Amino acid sequence: MNAIETKDLTKVYSNNFTAVNSLNLEIPKGSIFGMLGPNGAGKTTTIKMLTCLIQPTSGRATVGGYDVEKNPNEVRNLLGMVPQQVSLYKDLTVMENSQMCADYYGVPKDERDSRILDLMELVDIKYAKDKRIGQLSGGQKQKASLVASLVHRPDILFLDEPTIGLDPTTKRTLWDLIRELNDDGHTIILCSHDMHEVDMLCDNVGIINTGNLVAYDTPQGLKDALLESNRQEITEALTKISDESEKSVSQDDLENLSLKKMSVLLKSRDDGIIETISKSDNVKSVEVARNGRINLRIDSFDDMAVQNVLNDIISSGGIITSIYTEEPSLEDVFIKSTSEVNEDDRA
Ligand SMILES: Nc1ncnc2c1ncn2[C@@H]1O[C@H](COP(=O)(O)OP(=O)(O)OP(=O)(O)O)[C@@H](O)[C@H]1O
Ligand SMILES: [Mg+2]
Image (tube, rainbow, N blue to C red; front, side):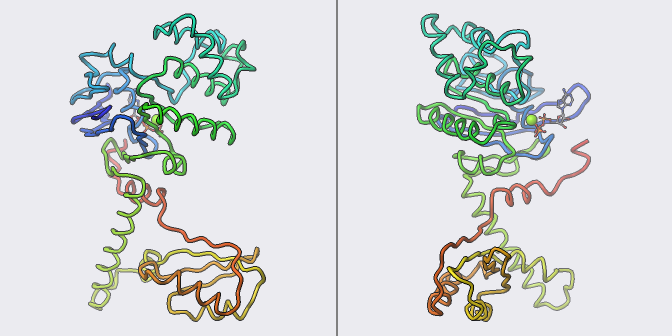
């Protein structure tokens, strides 16, 4: 079953600007969904429609089976929202804001304060519980916003760039919290520009560009698709090059697409080994960094390339202390999926 479904969901703002354009989206219940997209792509607008803060211009959306236009109250009762701009009452304290939210959602009075204090402890903001929101730092406000939006244990939680401005420790705490909530069956919709965060947490990722969904898959699926599309581009480019008449394909572009990064650190530097590796057919370039790492560009389409390089090192007596290879990242997918933009659609 889907927690969220949209059908041709569209938002045209009063200045006639189309921020979301016929969006069709399905987010399975109990999943963590990552919404990616460049600034101004329409992510916050989509979330605002799904959380009944603004009305769609056309199309429809259901949240937990309820239509956002016909049953906004039922939808609001199901969801929690950590907005991009903290929207708490500046003159009330952290505690008072959370209590107000809890009361709004009908959290039982005898549980209310202990739930709030537990959440405060979890995100480390209890020490500031009696401070007014207006007196808090950016990260502290973000934490207060989290407590207020989680106190009624919403089935569906929207997080619009929740880790922006959080220190690394709190960020990790929030990631753990997102996983815990998800383990308990909550559906999470996470908008973020942090690719690592999305890659690590999300079951599915949707990339939105100028109000349209341009990619939707698991993080790994998106990366595999990029690799496959690179393969196809290379094959096509190679065909053109062999044609000799086509000079527009840059050899550099082609090489960049077809090479994979590999980096090796040896126990002690050995110029003989470096020379051996550079002669390997699989290795297209070798560079030794100041810290001693041997950075290689290897043929990404030869499944044996990594193995061959390692065999060369080991058979030359090298001791490997660290090794990594770099596959296409979610960031690569993001850049590729959002690179083709019609400037008229952004204005
Ligand atoms: N109230 C409004 N009136 C007119 N246009 C708006 C309004 N709110 C947003 N927009 C426009 O709609 C587009 C989408 O905005 P939105 O806030 O949904 O983007 P976003 O994907 O959340 O971006 P970001 O990553 O910067 O948060 C932008 O071009 C923005 O200028
Ligand atoms: Mg936004």
